[in-house]
Structure formats: C-alpha cells, structure tokens
Image (cartoon, rainbow, N blue to C red):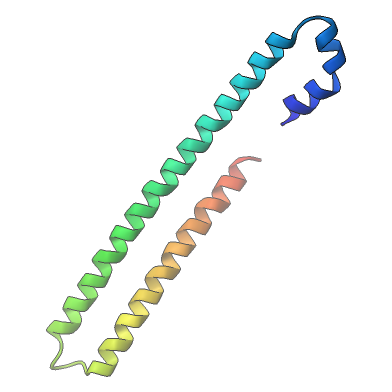
Length: 110
C-alpha cells in the first residue's frame, strides 16, 4: 500500500522521467506477491476447516455409538442432552481454533 501512495505522490516526477513502465512493473510484482500470500493463507484456512469438520463428524459418530451401546444404562433424555452438548462443544472448539489462527495471522504481521 505504501508503494501505491508513494507512486501517486511522485506521479509527476515518474511521468517526467518516463519511468511509468518501471513503476507499473513494481506494482504488479508487489500485487502478485500479496495475492500469492493471500491465496496460500486461504488454502491453509480451508484445509484446516476441512480437517476440523472431519474431526467433528468422527467425534459425533463416536459419541452416538457410545450412547447407543450404553442405552440400558443411560436414559434417552441424558443421551439427547449429551449429544447436544457434544455438538455445541465441537462448534465452540472449531470457532476457538479459527479465532486462534486469525489472531496468529494478525500477530505475525508485527
């Protein structure tokens, strides 16, 4: 962003010295670097999201099978409540991990 503002403030000098192509090339290189980093971050975020969703499915299935296996010991109301708690906990863990990664992203900039 500083390259754009510096270029705009010195635009008359750049045009007077016929350096438009040089600064245009610098701009495109900077933009490409930024886009490359952004796409890498976005791909890593989607990868993490897919893994967390897969983990969520596994935990829900395991909890369901455990509750079905314990159907003689655990009542239906407790089993339903346990499944609701498991699903809420999983959503909270996903949110927490995503917030942590967003926080780390902002901390790494400084």
